Amino acid sequence: MHLRGVMTHAGSSYDLDTPEALQALAEQERRLCVSAAERIRQAGLPCAEVSIGSTPTALSAQSLQGVTEVRAGVYIFFDLVMHNIGVCRADELALSVLTTVIGHQQDKGWIIVDAGWMAMSRDRGTQRQRQDFGYGQVCSETGEWIDGARVTGANQEHGIITLATGSQADITARFPIGSRLRILPNHACATGAQFPDYHACDAEGAIHTWSRLHGW
Image (cartoon, rainbow, N blue to C red; front, top):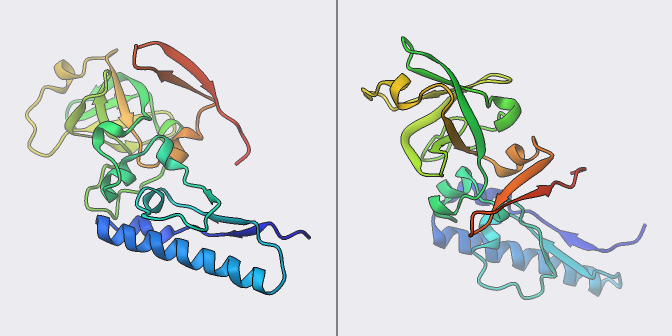
């Protein structure tokens, strides 16, 4: 066995939601991992790599002295959990699932779409946070948030969208069958893993297909 280095992941950062707390944890993560590497080297063992992770701390770190690698993953797209923590704005969420309205149950106020948990995943990461987005926040096809519209139910192939309590909107008129919506995910990793390819839209509106590397 060949020792390459040390690594850590500041999982407790997901329970924080202030810049001060995130900065403090980011420094603790860096300091303790660097200290562990130094102790290993003092014992005469090689420790070339010092690897830290977590998107909240990666974006809150004031110093990365002694660190050789940052493994944060969600920050390439961001998601609703990160939005709740406060590390990104709503307009910085880059990953969404395009879905089509396929039916309604008017007596229940349900809008049925063709994206269920096979598309969104069952991740409910926002459930314990300050704002619960159900299985995802609903947006227009062009990406504008539809306030109060959430995916509140997820079957295998179908999602159920409901509007905020008290809404008087005619769901069949506002969301007719065949109309398309975008759903922002709670957890970009879990949702992204459901698809072999991503369709990336650049600043000029051109669409590019990115194939995902499998195996994580």
